[in-house]
Length: 403
Image 1 (tube, rainbow, N blue to C red):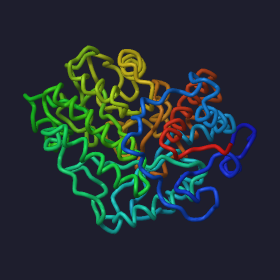
Image 2: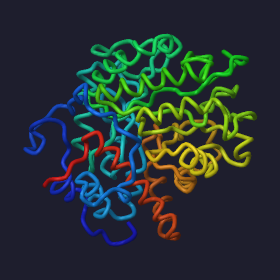
Image 3: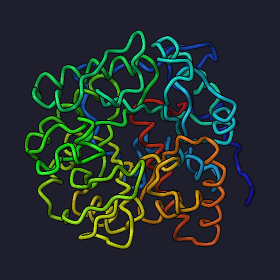
Image 4: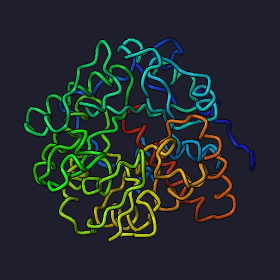
């Protein structure tokens, strides 16, 4: 490991940062998942890097303390989120958490559909194993994309159905959020904010063909996105807007092939749903892995500074966590070495790298660390992302510091 470690993170967590999973969190006794906030709790706005907050802010001071106690490698590990089965940790998952992975994605259960009791046991084991409290994410859109659907979890209708009743969707999403939060989940990789081109319909493989979109009208999709985001937050779970700047105009699914959008520009009406989700308080935006020829024809969106920094952060004013879609198994990025999938994304302005392959953590952390050691500007970029990732945890009450 390059560089001297000032304070080992295991010591840091024991002394400074405590995992809040219930009223006995400081005693070392088994605890339950974090409680959902009261219905009148304020909706979190997009997470602001702590460096821009007042020093008197206890949450910002906590994040500053944790980041300041990490070396470059530990900061890099916080940027990577790896897959673990919903019904129990694997050896690879334990190893990744031991190496400091910043989050986990709950994937399909190895033994069938995981019950709420099994998921709760898994998230408890995840947090007990982690060097620093982790974000626990799940793909819980509804319809054909719902990873948690065993006993104790509601079968969620497809987004095309959800979008017909935004008022009812807000209440429904709150209930789904409470189920997830009660099982230890802190981040839902939903909703899909993409506006499907009506001329494509089911020929739009990633969204239209799977009924994952709320509709074809930007205003209608915006209303549904807002309801979903606000409802989830009331239920105790953060939302993720995806797939920026939209997969509604492509034919191919980036999970299985490369994809290109020849029409979407920086002032496109289809961006309205992402603006609405940001205004509603969504603290995470997931990038598309497609190429947007009118914005940056030379780079896929997740590797494009024009898309992430100039458009999403600049024009749309988003200050929260920018995430990749899965880069562990997606065909769209197979020609990019594993380590470069992380470094190119962070260099473009991204923060959180998602991979269902727990074994990707090592190569990604090595590449991020090496790049930071060689380039001071990249090191500052990496630290900024680590702050955003830890601020997201602090905002949801996962990361707290002792008085």
